[in-house]
Every structure is written in C-alpha cells, then in structure tokens.
Length: 275
Image 1 (tube, rainbow, N blue to C red):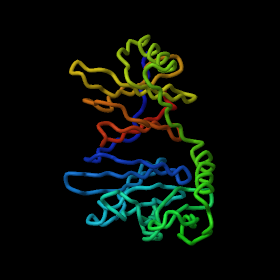
Image 2 (cartoon, helix red, strand yellow; image 1 turned 60 degrees about the vertical axis):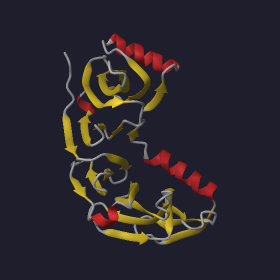
Image 3 (cartoon, rainbow, N blue to C red; image 1 turned 60 degrees about the horizontal axis):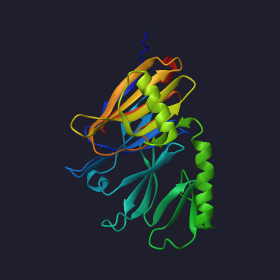
Image 4 (cartoon, rainbow, N blue to C red; image 1 turned 135 degrees about the horizontal axis):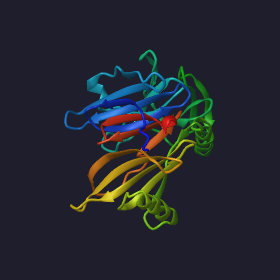
C-alpha cells in the first residue's frame, strides 16, 4: 500500500525564488524572490514550526539592488551593490525576522560569512585589508584583525555546527558508480530514464531522490521521489520541465520536513515522519 506524505505548506511566490537561506538557530527560512520583468525583488521569512510567512519591509525602489546573503539567530542579512555592472557586493543590512525591523546597517562593509561569534565582513573598497567580526544582533565590532584564512576557517567550523539538523543532498553525476546504483534502484521501482545527475539523501524515515529524465522533445524533466525504507513510493513530483542542464541542492530537509521548489516559484513542504 502506497503511503502519502502530508503536505504541510504550499505557496506560489509568482516569480522565481533565487535564494533560500536556513536559519537553524531560530528555525526560520529566508527567501529572495526576483521578478526580472518588473525589476522587483522581495524578501520573506518563514517560521518553520508555525509555517507563518512574512514579507520583509524593504522599499521596492531599493530592493532590486539588494540581495540575500544569509540568515541566522533570528536575523536576515541583505547586501547592496558597489559596482552594479560587476555585481560587487557592498553594504550589509541586518533585519530582525520576528519584528521585521532593521537591526543595523553597515554601508561600507561586505558580508563574508557567519561565524560562531557573529558576522564576518571586510571593507568592500579594500578587500585586501583585514577582516572584521561584528556582533550578529547589533553590528558592533568585535575584532578587526582577522586574515582571510582565519575568516574562512571560522565560517567552515560554524557551518559544520549550525547545519547539524539540516540534510542537503549529495550530487552524483552520470557515469559515477553511485549514480548507476541509484539509477538501477529507480528502474526496479518502474521509474525509468534517469540521466545527467542524481541528488540523493537519506533520513531515518525516508530516501529522497531528485533526478533528470529525458523527454521526447530532447529536453529534461527534473523529478523528485520519496520512498520509505521498505521501498514504497510516498511522493513523486515534477520540479521543472524543459531543462537543458542540471541544478544542485534541488531540495533539503530540516527538522523532519522536506523542502523543495516547483517551477522555481512554488515552495512546498512535506512532513517526512509520516513516510
């Protein structure tokens, strides 16, 4: 008997979601949505326990020239642009996800990454200068003497800790041994035609596979399937059609929930514990 995963949340943003950042400390998502036709950008925060979605109050005229950097400890960090032609990031604006208020703003700095103690940044117009460490909630300067190597090591250490409860898929390319094993598993479940690449993840409850299937017209369709550990199919969904290549991180898992986008603009969240 086929199990059906319960749908916890669905929302169509009406324009492509460019970035999703996971705030594991506050259990929130931050999302950047961009409409290139209208030159509009919107930013959202989603509380993953209550699934309450809120739009961040960024002025529409300014928002196109901002982008999402990261989210952690209940704050969403946006960047501005220095040289817009080159896409140079300049400026850091921190917003409180719960209150939607601006916590702090540093127009001359560029975001580098999150460390355990706070935000790592550098002077946008002098990237060769020493890196700084800022207090995450206030922007107060904690250190001004970090080398880029020290900053990179701090980001890597904290990333390993902050994403312990999150699962991102592993990418296997066509021709690799593990790609062939997963492809054979799909074929044993009457799901044929996996090509180009497969993204794979396992939890205690489920096996999740995102793969690309050739269509008669010569393009590719990206599909996601979820099985329980008996091999029973729990979910099958089309993520995108008419593709000419592959993507990466087409889904992720946080606190036993599966997150993915359909057609770039439609977010769906399923509960894996029921699988």
